[in-house]
Image (cartoon, protein in one colour):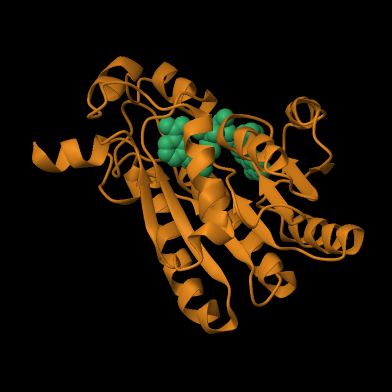
Length: 258
Ligand SMILES: NC(=O)c1ccc[n+]([C@@H]2O[C@H](COP(=O)([O-])OP(=O)(O)OC[C@H]3O[C@@H](n4cnc5c(N)ncnc54)[C@H](O)[C@@H]3O)[C@@H](O)[C@H]2O)c1
């Protein structure tokens, strides 16, 4: 894939799932450096190990995306270490909610927790990244969700946060397009990762039901999302900005038809 080789990236939420798969794919494609972060340091080391076979230099950092100072320091240090920043995948996120919560009963701290990570976290990262990003040529992909297109009963905070990621992405794309920076959102459908299995345990949804309601009749894998995410980061997607790319096995199309 054109335009990943020799580049430097940051990936949040890189300890598992889509963030981990994105890191591995970027390394396979020849990225020169990837600074990965997460709150789960053990998972970060696992991700680093998965990239061992490649020449990519991987740095790991414990960063809670809610903490502005930590995000700023991480991006500053990455820039100092590698001398540039060509792209960023803002993947870290939480599901929030449980099977019974409604907008009437949601506890404020749960709402704030989800918004703090899924919206403020992406904002903190983008602000720091945009200051350092290669211009022209830099690229950011933020992870939203198909729940950013339709409300999700009993998961209002999650759904609202993912709508917000799209607004943030489109706004920034408009601000930085003329500088040659592309900023896009990817909207995964049901994907077999920890966040999804945790949500299933809380009674938010069922893997069988959601996987079964995609047009392909199954859930996606983290790698299938990461493949498209890396394409969006790469120069192959040079005319794509401000876009919300649904990667969901047809889940959204099936929903619209029903
Ligand atoms: N799995 C799905 O079905 C699905 C569907 C649509 C969108 N998404 C989105 O994809 C993204 C990645 O999720 P995933 O499916 O790979 O799940 P995951 O749980 O495997 O990965 C999420 C990662 O985010 C990290 N994280 C959580 N809170 C953090 C914080 N405060 N600071 C830094 N890191 C933090 C976790 O430790 C974890 O490693 C999320 O934004 C999620 O909302 C997932």
